[in-house]
Structures are given as C-alpha cells and as structure tokens.
Image (cartoon, rainbow, N blue to C red; front, side, top):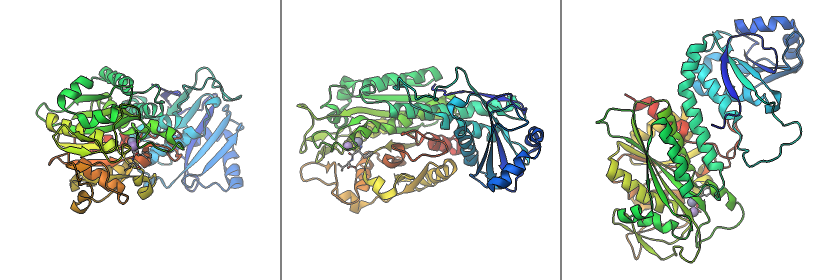
Length: 498
Ligand code: BES
Ligand code: MN
Ligand code: ZN
C-alpha cells in the first residue's frame, strides 16, 4: 500500500523529536496526559494562546516552533471545539488536520489521542488514525524529482499516543481496511489511461484475491456469448479490449442473497465519434471512478472480514474514435434483448452499465444493486462537488444511504425519476435512445439504467462531481477523492452484517 508513513500506537509520553500534535477543547481545556507533557513548558502555551487569541475553537490551531522545555521541533495544538459535539467523522477530520501540520520533511510525528475528558476510546482513535492516512495520501509515482527541502527523511513514523495500545490496534485493524480501500480507489483513478486500460485494470483487481475475494474476468468472447453488445459497442473503437470483472466476497450466511455494487469503468472517455473538446479532456482518465470505488469497497469488506455477502461488478472499456468506432445512429441489442439507438457516442457510461446491471441482476439475484458512475456533467451543474446525485426505486435504501452519507460526509442528494422523464428516451427506431435531450440530462441517463434493473431495489449514484477534481479537505489533497468507499462501507456496517 502507498503508506506515506508508518503508523504506530504508543503510550502518552513526551517524544524526543519531530512534531507533537495535541488536542485542545474550547476554553483551553486539555486532558491529563496532555497537561503532564505540557508541564515542562511552563507558561509557554497560555502565553502563546493569548498572543494568538487561540481559545480551542473547532478548526483553530496554535503552532509553536522549537518549544522551550520539550525536545520536539514543533508543538501543534489543534482546537476541537466542544468535545460533546464530536461525531465519528469529526475524529477523522481531526486526524487529517493533525497530519496536515506534519509536512513529510518534518520527520516523525506524535499525536496525543486525548481530549479534556481523557484518552479517546479505541473507535475514536481508529477514526483519528484513518484521518491521518487519508491526509497523508499522495500520488507521486511519476515524479522523478523533488523540490529542494521536500526530501523526506529515510524512515519516518507517526505515533498515535493512546491509553491502551492493544485495543487501539484492534479497532484500527478494521478501519485500516477502509483506509486501504480508499487509497486503492484513489490510486486507480489517478493512474493515467496509457497505463490503466481495461486489461490492466482487470489485472489489478486480481490483487483482491489476496484478501479472499473471488475474482472472475469476462473477456470479449465471453461477453459476446452473453450478448453484452451494448458494452462491447462502446469499446469497439479502441485497440484495448474490454473486460468485465466480477468480484465476490462471501462473509455472510450461505443462503443470504448478496449485496451488489456495480461500477462504470470507462478507462478513458474521449467521447468517441461525438468527440469531446480538448479542454479538460485529460480528466477523463478518471471516468472509471465508479469501478475504482467498487474495487476499493470490496477490498475494505474483505480485509475487515465483513459478515456479509457482496458482489462487485465493473464494466471496463475505453471510449475511442477510430475506423471501427460506434457511430451515432447505430442500434445495439443489449444483453436483456432491448435495443438502444446511439444518438451521442459520448453518452457511453449508461451503455456499459445497462449490460452489467442486467448481468448481475439475473446471475446473482442480489438483495439490492447500487451502481456508481461518473455519468453526467449535468449532475455537476445540479449539485456541484459536495453531493452525489442519487436515483432510486427504493425509498428505504435511499434513507439508509442518506444517513450513511451524513455520517461519513460522503453525501448524497436524491433526484427524481418518473414516466415523464422516461418518455424522453423513447426512440423512433429502437426501444430507446441513449440521450434524452438537453434538459434533465442526469435524470434521463438514470432512466435508461432503470430500464435494466427489473424490480430489484436499486440506487444509481452519479459521482461525476464528487469523485474527480475534488475540493481540498482535511482528509484529501488528491485530485481523486476515492468517494464512495467510506459511504458504502458505512451502509453495510449499519444495516447488512449479521
Ligand atoms: N464521463 C462523462 C461525464 C463526466 C463529465 C464525468 C465531466 C466527469 C466529469 C460522460 O460519459 C459524458 O460524456 N456524458 C455526457 C452525456 C451527454 C452526451 C448526453 C455529458 O455529460 O455531457
Ligand atoms: Mn462520455
Ligand atoms: Zn463517460
């Protein structure tokens, strides 16, 4: 894993070097172990706090270089606000904020996992640790030079000081699975399309075998045999062959129907013959973020041995224009027999998902299907980058996802579906067409998917806004957020483990 730094747990003790990060509640309130380590600094902290008008408000910080009385190079005090109000995600953010004060050139860091009321509970410690790992993530494997002063010391460690190392380690083992899943998703999304094409993506998904996931790959002949012509039509203009990957984790009862997660994996989306303009097209290497999230989620579930049966399915293609590419006006027959007239070859994600949704639904008879896709630019216009669009035929599943979204801050906002929108994709020549006109573009895209899910409870998450070009936060500085891994892991944790 791209561990930027080794994470360890240790006792509350004054470190001999590096950066020391302490938490401070509003009104300058420290916990007992924190007070003890600060006692060596005399009145340094109250004086610095007064000078900087620092009171411990949430999001505030006091940064003291070379603090007298301590051996560390830097003392960072993070305000937490009132501890009573802190929810699990606030601890993730605190871990991220702490890590944000520790540049990789700083060497070791120690974070005291303590509030005024005393040491954090193991679960809270694990959330802090999760935040440090997500914040520390960098995708720099293609950088051959570093700027001066940015060279990291050979071996650096982040120590989270806790009351009970064994129980912290145990709680972290679960959360680490999720952290690794997010990192895995971010890595896949950041990877350029000359490296990560469908066959290579499928190869990387095989790594999940190591954590006990069964991985099956459908190649082009297998997909032809199944009749996945809608998916294959998208990939036919590329020299890279298409693939579908099915991942299965069976941690539940044998008789339990699996949960199904389906991802759009367009490794590069030029638009095809309906080619996109040049500006910003490089971002379309991330048009497989849905698939990346599904891989990251399957890793998380398996690595933490979730007591659930889950199927992950990803449709991997490259959408390119060439002599063999699909044309506007072409009509394809999908795996379930319905025909689609291609109006715009850039509306390719729905064509990929149509076949994968039908395949998963009929082959695995899942309890529900949730698909993730960077499906439409229109969802970014509608919701910006803070919420993913949620389309569904099932109110209860929507409620659960909305709550999981609030808990993880990977939030979803429900959008409408209905017969009036569905009519917009009726075609003169085929059963349906792949675009529905200028208005409600995210909705008509979802209406096409809805025609392939039967009566199975289903949610479509349009993550075009949340997955790519992500706003900088305490827990992510990368272009790709890995959005969805924590959300769906939370959903499973809250409702589906026996
Ligand atoms: N992959 C794009 C959607 C997208 C846009 C994702 C921006 C991330 C950032 C998708 O395949 C697409 O091109 N959609 C078209 C649909 C249109 C042709 C009906 C769009 O949104 O413009
Ligand atoms: Mn497209
Ligand atoms: Zn696309």
